Image 1 (tube, rainbow, N blue to C red):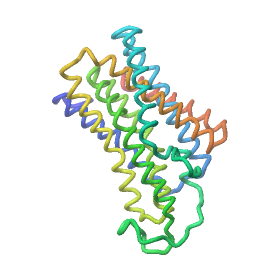
Image 2: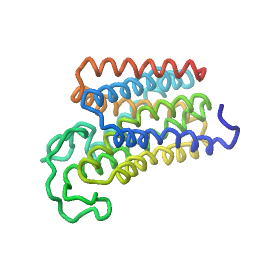
Image 3: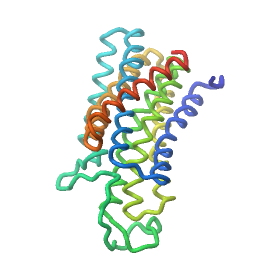
Image 4: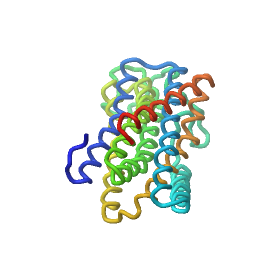
Length: 280
C-alpha cells in the first residue's frame, strides 16, 4: 500500500497527505460557507476521530509495546506539552479568543463590515469592505493551527515507524481532523475582506507544519527505536488535550448538543471502519 522507500521519506509523504486537510477545509469554506450547526457537526466528527484514535490505537499500541508506566509518562508529557504551548503562545481558538480584552468570534458568523485601513497590501479584495478584526482572527487561527500541527505530526512519524499501516491510519484520521481547521481559518479571512485565493492559500499553508513535525520526529526515532512507544503515547496526550480543550467546547458552542454527540459517534465510526479497511 505504501512504496518501499526510506522510512523518513515515507513519513514525509503520508504526513503531506494529512496536511492537505486544512487546504480541503479552506476550499470547502470558499465554495460553500457552512452554517453554525453544520460546523458544530464537523467539529464533533473531528473530536470523535481524535479521541477514538488516541485511546483505541495510540495508547493501546504504546501499552502493548512498553507497558503502563511508559504509556502514562508519555501521555502525561504530551498533554502537559500542549498545555504549556497554549499558555505561553496565546492564539485564537476555534471558538473564542484567548487574548484578554477581546470578544469571541465564530468563524462563520455574519459581521458588519466597515471601511478598512490601508493594511495587508495585496491580500485585500478590491473593495471597501475590510474588517481588520476578522482578518486578525483568521491569521491568528492559522498561527495556532500551525503550532498544533507540529506535535500532531509526531503521531504520524511514530505511527509509521511502529508499522507503515499504522502510520497511514493516523495520517488519514488527521486529514479528516484538519478539515474543520481549514474552514475555521479561511472563513474569517474571506469575510474580513481577503480574496478567495489568498484565504484558501493561508489555510492550505497552515497545514504544512504537519510534515515538518513528522519529518523531525522520524529522523530522531529512526535512530532511537526504543522511544517509539513513548512517542505514540505522547501524541495521544497531545490529541486528547486539543480535543478536550478546544474541539468539544467549540462543537457544543456552535452546534446543538445532539449534533455534537452525533458528530463524535460518526468520527469514532470512521476510525473503526478505517482500522478494519487498513487491517490494523
